Image: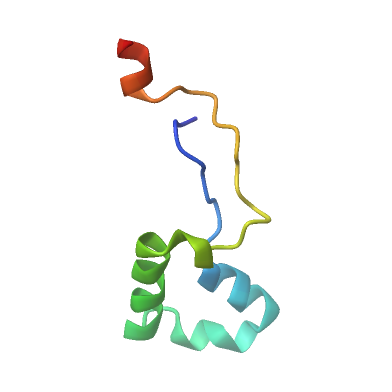
Length: 64
C-alpha cells in the first residue's frame, strides 16, 4: 500500500516476457539505463499494470 501509483512490473520485464532471449541482457548496463530512464520519465512505463488508486493518502494531505 502506498500513496503514489505503483508499477509492479518494469519495462524490461515486459520486454523479456515478449522476447525471452532479451534475458541475455539482464545484468547489463543497457538494462540499468532503461531502469533509470523509467524512474526519470515515468511515461515510458507500461500503463496496463499500474495501480492508479493507492489506499494511502499523501503525508502532506494528512496535515491539512
